[in-house]
Length: 243
Image (cartoon, rainbow, N blue to C red; front, side, top):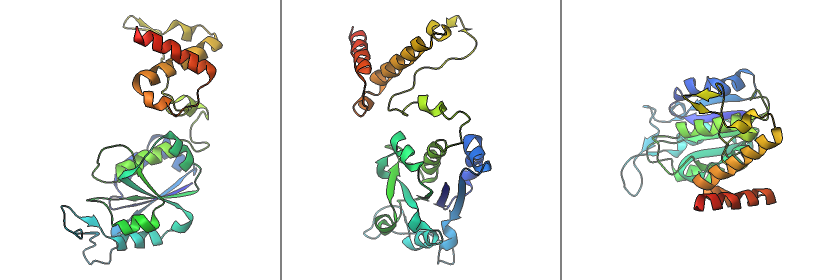
């Protein structure tokens, strides 16, 4: 996969992208990440990339020419162009899986009051938000999406099945996790996890995932295809919770 990022703050990515899973993916040439400074494509002698909005209003808007020129320096017509925006569709695991299958993604990171809408209307494929709140710019949001996508690429994680148990992979929240020691501050690990009975352990994990999802994110259950066993477990959970 190739990822290009259009930004006016390239240095923000240095530490985050060089560490942990993303750093290893780049080192192994599983993903190539490049950063383009939008200011380098400004026609203004002072390298300004923003101006006052037509129609008035507070703040500044990023001009279309520098962004278009930066985009044109890349092979954007064969890429999926994403603008990080609080007005976009909310990012989730399904979208992460979809994007992880792309060969080339370009992120546009806006600032101020956003970017000239002519860029969005004519050159952007997706507007994506990471939540119902506002950030100073699109860089942090782009990093969140990049992390979520890159870790799904083949060869990135040491265990290819490790992400399948994680929250949201199947639409459910992940079951609780425990490690050594068996007893910590007089609190013991659930006995079933020490039993060696793999069938019972898997049943416990599924029950816990359904329980946590029902208690914390009922909305997720509306979009999940549940088995007959899952539905029965949920009925039992509801009886326990309602007591």
